[in-house]
Amino acid sequence: MVRNDSFYDVVIVGAGPAGAAVAFTTAKLGLKTVIVEQMPEPEHRVRCGEFMPGLEEIFRIIPEKGDFFSLLLESERFSTNITREISLVSPFGYERRVNFGAYVIDRRRYVQWMVGKAVDMGAELLLNTRCVQLEIGGEGVRGVVVKRKGGDQKVLKGNVIVGADGADSSVAKQGSMFRSYGDLDLVTTRQYVMENFLGDEDVCRMYIGQDYSPGAYAWIIPKGEGTINVGTGIRKPYLRSGDTLRGCLQRFIKDHPQASNLLKDATVKGVISAHVPVGGSLEKTFWKNVLLVGDAAGQVIVHVGAGMPPAIIAGEIAGQTITKYLEGNTPLSDYEKIWKSIMQKPIKNGLYIRKLWDKIAHNDKKAEKFLKIIRQGMLEKMIRAKIPITVRLFAPIITKIL
Image (cartoon, rainbow, N blue to C red; front, side, top):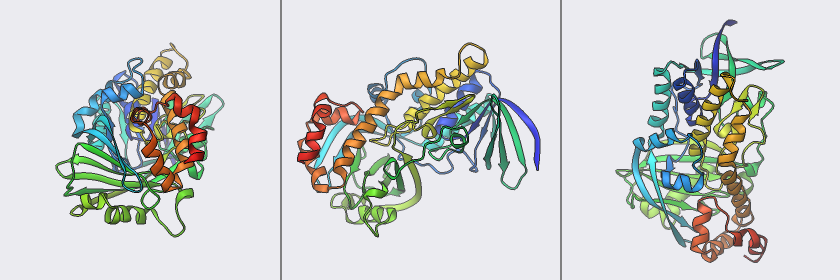
């Protein structure tokens, strides 16, 4: 049974970082906003390492253009720890360090703050409610058919529909924008929250190697006061026969020559799993009156799996563009033009670096050599999604001779 329609300026599917940023912005600007979230609360399961580059680092990676960074400025309020370095550890224990200012945030509190503020400013929040289908008409999408757990279906009609529902976006699929992800373009992750960490808490550690993180990397991200996020990612083409994601993470914790010493007294407090799209942004992130934001749009700097800053920036861009569109001042397609002018270059560079790494990652000895021969300045640039001219010119030669 479908109940009576409700009408909104904007209907947002998904209350993660991207959807929360859109909702905050549209509610602040006076639009009638509704957020649809299938879980019992926003960020019911935190699906990332919660590592957030400091603002100075963000502006090195993503150029500061326009007034789209206010919510990123707020994120520092929710930090639980500050880190100053990134440590990259090779398959055989060779370590490189890069100065990189960042903080680790309480992502649940941050996202729930954005959603809570949106509600305070008039937005509606429908929890335990999933998107069943889009109601498509000649001029675009008239509304979203939703169903609350244990309840009836309902149509939420809106002028603009926003898909902020992750890599497997149902909005993208029904709005003719979805791209199927090949096995190389999707990282599956598993992460433990652990206590009683013994290492330095001002270093974010990343580990590569077929035994622990085939096709991706493992990490130790200190949240402060002895609590850490410990996880690993895999891509199927690199996973050895009989191996599993859980097995890789357990082996990393128990057997890694360096990490196991840091983790020997650590105990598991919680566990999450997630999928991270690493195939670059979608070619089209708007269709008629539908926008895609965050992972649904592939807005991830893929070589390091950084999705939260782009999602929040894109959310602000979407919210401002929707408002101007409904006021008759700009076409909705400006959303795509603006976000690409700001973020497309680092996203494309990240994909280039990921594909370069793909030619090395299957062989631990090659990965070891690469980390040893690359110059410090080049490594620092690549961490920040910049491609040194030497790497671009000689990448084919480098990957062949390793």
